[in-house]
Length: 215
Image (cartoon, rainbow, N blue to C red; front, side):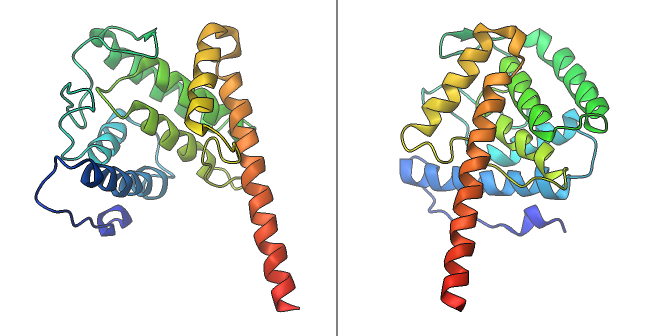
């Protein structure tokens, strides 16, 4: 049994309550993280792994918050927009995802900077937007899939240390990269490094406090 199968969720029968949905999303995000970033941390990235991670992430979530339908673990079959951005037509998604997996697997062994590769993978996934919903969460899981393959890194929460509107900061970095294609995820990479710095400062503060208590 894989570790992702050990994370259980116990919810009331009603799936319509927003609190239940929020709780389900948190737990299933943890399950998807374990599946992708721990159970498959050393595996090549494949479309099958991505679809299964999305199926775990979106299990029993059959509609988006705007009412549109969701097909967990399946590429979208409709056109989709978000934040004013227009994404590739559904018929182009399989080809682009196949190319993305091939390209990233080739670069994983060659890229010396895991932060650059993580940001580029997350950004490229976002601009394909292969699923009906959950694309932002999946892109951040992929970011951590890259980081956890590196002995020099650890999981990152994008926007960590941003005292206000971390989600808006993330969306803004994606939008800025869209407006400046030559950066290829550069703004997202900057946010990643800022977030890692915030986590490092927090970790150091915890260690220093522990040392004081031991003294």
